[in-house]
Length: 220
Image 1 (cartoon, helix red, strand yellow):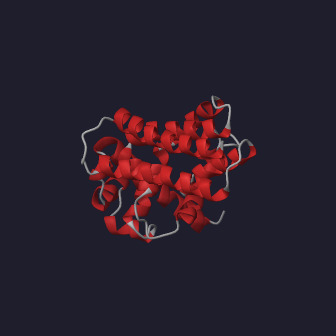
Image 2 (spheres, one colour; image 1 turned 45 degrees about the vertical axis):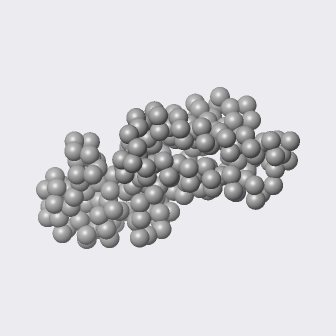
């Protein structure tokens, strides 16, 4: 690796690590460029030499907070006997962790970044390649797919091997599941309803199970 590349990588890590520390200490909603710069030992304007927008830096830092979810996901998937069950269990795991850290998951899966997220994910793992070590081959492809819709649809596509269900139904059911989660997440973050993380996850899963039940009944 060229000296310039090493220097850029080191600077990116300084700013990401500083942002992670601030999120842990003050919450993601209180993070700003001035605080990050001070924590990293640089002026806030220096950040924009390495990140186009502050949201990109927050996205990188947020990636460090989803490790528990990704490590626990294989355990959930193993409990499923069918692909539909695995699909539901994958959502259970996702809802459990996302509603415990709503700002983090909003930053990763909903916030407007003004840039293709697949490029950002690839860039992140080029810097933090060691983050991939602890994950199975089953989970690694998910790490590189930042689009929640396509990630969740992959499991449901396999359900065609087990029951007579067409592609359009799968696409619609999966899209409804994602929209249910996005709607509940936005509601929680906007404090439109007073719900504990467990309550939000339970209510979201109730609706997702209902649409899956309707799909299975239609296929029978």
